[in-house]
Length: 326
Image 1 (cartoon, rainbow, N blue to C red):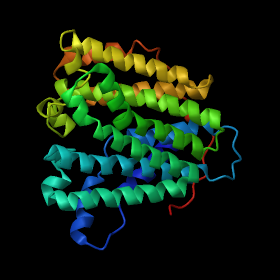
Image 2: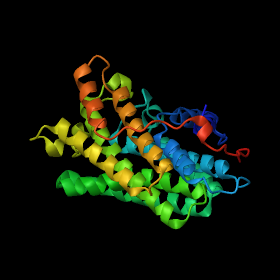
Image 3: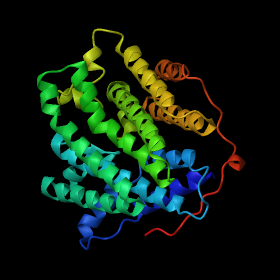
């Protein structure tokens, strides 16, 4: 097990055993909402910290700050999903009843708020700078959501790009920044990792738009076509007069290429870029029907346009010193 694997398992364990708010029924809702999913954003925090920690004093608590930052971004992510499900009247989330379906909108609003409060606290435990990045991102995500009505009324590629960047990609940006901050990186490196995360987030949103059309609802744990049924323009619907699958997959590849280019040169950056490509490819293949070999082949071929990079050997990585969770 690599250092990142063990730290990600710490994040999973924290999510599996959330603190009590004193109301048993709400505790059950929170625990259900926090059942770990893909954990792409928390893993990005850890991978970003790993990529920038080489020159650090080994006595510094990098791993502790990174785990708290990873927890903070996942709590923010889940909180916004709870609130999104209220807005969209969504019945399912990760294959189970959504919080709003299980308890109604009033309770769901408070559950989302509770998760936001815990996320803010985790960000503060990571660092003051991480807390500022977390708060900025919550504002961006709210601003993106507020743009949705305008995008529905007047669909455009430019409007969708801005909406997707604010609502989705900014959280990936913060994840990469918080990881670099946990490692004590200088501002230029933090900014470069933020740009990397922003492009990865845009690629993820394009992929999510695609999977909302071609994904298998049984494997995704939610119905497909939700955006179309709610009248929300996506990277697919805005390209319906083209070979939209090829177009959208092409956008994913372009954004991943930009993400790699944003990082400072070096082996650690190369491996971070390779991880992002591999993670999104795995997410795509995990969401489509295993029997649809043609679709799986097209997705795999698209991701292979980016030059593959071998994974690092565990012995090449310096061990992290962990501290007990707060």
